[in-house]
Length: 157
Length: 429
Image (cartoon, rainbow over all chains, first blue to last red):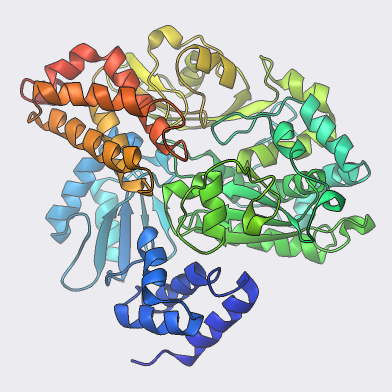
């Protein structure tokens, strides 16, 4: 698939405004992901060419950041906190409930492409432990209970 | 306005940020007017006299950091000074900057203008972790409002001082919160910490003089200018000025944030959070997030400021306490921290890249009951070798050793118990 024209325009804008091609690398990756949900090998090579950097250099940036996805993810990404405060308040039980309900563990996506589960400490919601940030708007949810989880799963696209 | 809660007194309980007219009706931007009528040096001296210590974790005096910034006229080559506001809050247990960013964006803008003025900055960047979407949206909106009203941008309030603020979302990595790594992230690449010296004040973003301050630090600044240094110092119970936005999580009945005088004790904070949950008896607590060593009940009456907590053998860090009751397992908590820090190491320095995953594996094995006695020796070796500062470019590894070293010294018997079939707290009926 060729690079959509609007994405290319966006990248050229970023190069002009972020202080050059290298400075624009991270925002470029974010723009690709905002449009397509993740960054494929093909896109990575295409946008590297637009920036004038090597794919390896761009992938070095992409692979450094946890929230740049280099594999396809589900429509709803659940970043479940596995940190200390959430762990002290039952985060593992929520992880197990997700496994039982959706059949996925950390790093996995449901076969229907609805959900991806990722462990992420800390989500800055320690006062709402066990907490997660969910979906494209990264909504903070918590304290998570099996009932709240069910509601979340039912309401997701 | 509630002057004993300067930082959070004006926030709405639902965290919806104020519009600019609402903020101005509450006295907003008066501190900016007052500051810009002074010289940058007078502003700096005022903040110095207020004894404002950086709230990001290290507690370095804010004004001393600012003083390293050259005036634009002294600069050898032309270009801006930068002020960076660090909102990449990713320390396990910390959730205070999220609140200040979400609920009080105009307070942050005021502080940024004043700090920018004192450091001769003309460009400011607020880096916010990508998960804080409401904060990113709210601050972006508030910046536009302030610019439209002439409170921000070119020639602020016709004083001749210009400052532009932009918001930069991070793409998720704990190390981005380290100031030199943060600068690398803003330059668009991998966020690898850089060796110091040169310090950012000499050579920071794009090689320009740069100051990096935490969100809470900056949010305190307008109040110092509005009410004076003596007032700010009088808010505190100790030599370190101001209030502190503490947080409590883990095993407490009402987790949340508490703004209280700097130097408030853990006993008072835990009481105000409804007391210890679980079995109701305190085992230990981490005073300021994942990278701070455990303290026991004997430290409940230590004034929680940077100096006193350090003297008690830990660190104030972010001031967000993680509380463990007697049924919680500090080995498990440390294992979670270590897994996190191992995952988040940038991989540059060998002791960090290799040592943290090793420690994490052993702690996990202890929990699962598969660890052997020689693993314990390795754990002690790692803590001993990796704890001193200066063995890696940044403090990620040293910070990660905080909980590990204190676990080994404080809970040696409990760690030993884990050799016989895993976590005794999990085995318990």
